Length: 55
Image 1: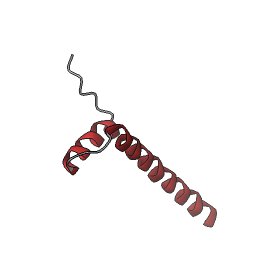
Image 2 (image 1 turned 180 degrees about the horizontal axis):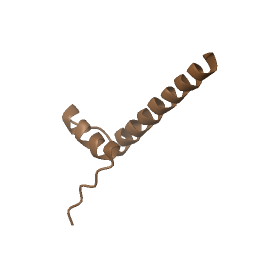
Image 3 (image 1 turned 135 degrees about the vertical axis):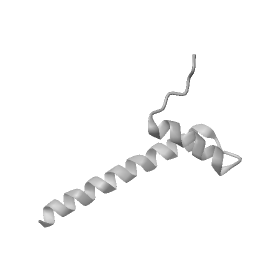
């Protein structure tokens, strides 16, 4: 029981660290944003896997 709980906790921590790493990568690529809404707009398509190119 304890080992199962520990493995679940480790997996959750790994997933949150992965998400944190992706967001940090977007921040580095952006070189700063003027507004928090622009930052959110940059994160959502990347995190959601959306392709916004129309051509």
